[in-house]
Image (cartoon, rainbow, N blue to C red; front, side, top):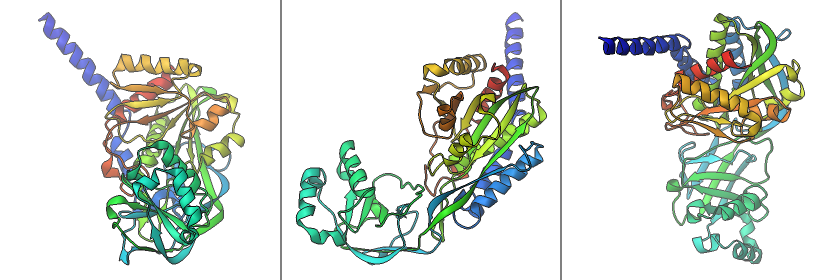
Length: 429
């Protein structure tokens, strides 16, 4: 009987814990929000059409529904920067065979407007791995300057050689008319704030026909010198004036041509929706400290929204007790990573995370990483604000790829992360 009582008590505690945890957040609502933010209508939350404005409006309406307050008259903080965009049609033909955008290829993000057919030059693996020899060969064969240089990354495993081609050809090419990269892994895209004078095309390696002679490129890119972006900032007043701050970037990569867009479900519709879920929670559960929610634009273009904010803060940065940045929150099957926590400056935060995780058994794996400038926590850290960045690990996700959709996310650590962070806020001093 005594053993039965113990087992019954353990089960009651277990189910009470998870009942309380499951009622603390709304995963179904989060999935709905991610689905909206990563939908075709929102076009990758980028730079073509009204995608950025539509995304900002959606987030602000959700904050308003939860009753979050504004700093001043608006949730928005406007700022501007240049960005290269791809609003028009695009065509790439290899040996006159039309390739499929987003599947066979991606256009380099700094590609200029161009409509031209090129000859191709592809070195063999021996020459590709001889960086001195290839420069000497090119300098003696000036007719190659009118060709596209084909780099097959599967033909070299040396990281220094890859860096050589990235720095001397991709980023600062003066040897060829343009570059073709053959990508053996998943294709990845990015954002550029400038246009190069030459085209770059990333082609999936298995889509490339060996001994191809020509590549036709028709790209209608447009450099926007003063793209208007918006940070979104709201807060919930607490019993104390100091702030705990949650941040996430809501921008992604946008659209490439008329048909291809980068949904960005994991990166970072998941973090955006996670913050909205936290906002719902704290609107019903008054916190000890005031809590600010900051949704940044321009993270993918170089942490631009968070950098602009720390240089133009809405309230004194010294009032921030701690900042937690959430980026990539849609998995968690293999635990979480806490960036900055491995540095001695963050011993207090790391010890608290470890204590709460040990007491509540949120994650089997919770790793710490040293200082890194890989998301929007970093500008705050540089300004002396205690700032950590958390991302979930595991699952099959598609980084900067058209397949980064809601259905690829597992949410294996969603409830656990929500519980860990609410406990962290409750116990942080």
